[in-house]
Amino acid sequence: MAHSTTNFNLDQKFDFTAALRKSIMTVLVIGAVLLAIGVITEMFGASHDHADEAGHAYHWYQRVFANLWINNVYFTGIAIIGVFFFALQYAAQAGWSVPILRIPLAFGSWLPIAFGLMVVTFFIANHDLFHWTHSYIFDKSHPEYDKIIDDKGGYFYWPMEKGSFPLFYVIRLFLFFGFWIFFFNKMKSLTLAEDIHGGTDYWRKMRTWSALFLVFFAVSSSISSWDWVMSIDTHWFSTLFGWYVFASWFVAGLSAITLIVIFLREKGYIEMVNENHVHDLGKLIFGFSIFWTYLWFSQFLLIYYANIPEESVYFVERMQSDVYSPFIFVNLVLNFFLPFLVLMTRDAKRHAIFLKVVCSLIILGHWFDFFLMVQPGTLRQHGGFGLMEAGMFLVYGASFTLVAMSALAKKPLITKNHPMLEESYHHHI
Image 1 (cartoon, rainbow, N blue to C red):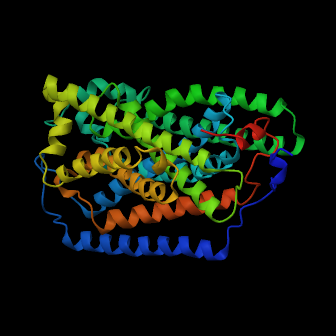
Image 2 (tube, rainbow, N blue to C red; image 1 turned 180 degrees about the vertical axis):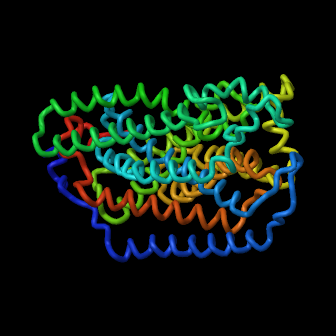
Image 3 (cartoon, one colour; image 1 turned 90 degrees about the vertical axis):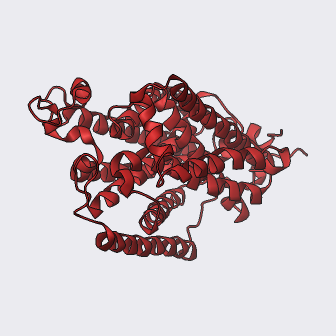
């Protein structure tokens, strides 16, 4: 008799035990303690009277704001990548990924929290994060008038007066999160309805909604990267920056999905997920780590070769800085050399220990990628990696994990009426 998915408990739910919750909360508390020590150290160690080359004084809270923004953007990315991965599987009519689909979808539960954090951080810290929010740079009579930013002002302020309220920017922020949360809730409701009613109607509806989401995501992910990250260095621009940020988000999101899949398998859940499914996740991480590197190198090489001052300044302030230059190599080692060398073989992609180590380091590595995108433009020589950075990363990471795991525990782990469930069970590569 041939084996089938009926041999498995397709109504199995993840039990988010008190012990596991306590472990995650412990990480959160450790992070909060490190963060508090880091903030206190910065408060008493920062020179409030010291000014940068433009004559602007540095204050300890600017580093707090920069770290909030790094983690807001980074974990927002992992959350929306979860929804993206889910939608991509339906749009592509993929069968292999059916038993793991609920895992990335659970990431979307972070989006409402991320929205609140982004809005609050922006309205509190915008002057300390974005140079273009200062009204004097649009005043032609002011000594710090900036023609380049003035020419770009409409992109942030339209239809308001430049230097007043950045209405167009805020509208985009609300629009992106609004639609992302809408699509997430729509997909969640459809996949739960499919569990109840069965058939192929819900699968077809999901394909339609997934395709619509992917079109919106293609536009919104790029524009959000310009708004939230590239506009920090307002003079600078890169035509492939949207792709670059997406690649960084995607590899980090894939690594998070893989870690949870392995964790659930080791705890006896999602039994129909075998080493072939894990191998596919490993291949995606391997391939998109190379894709991220290709974009990193393409962006770097063209700017380096052309040597145009307004383009090369982005890399000069990172590569010629005693504070940031070491992290260029940390970035490349963790995000390219490590996954490339370790995951090159077939066996490594099927081995839980290799994947757990690599995925954990990739999540840290791509955090450093966003660290390098945000800190040099906001903090100049006053940045760096210390207790504050480590603590806030742990606080956000633990909070994200709590939200995602709580969402995962609320519904069955497997989409039991997905028409390709049987195909996934027989998946072999």
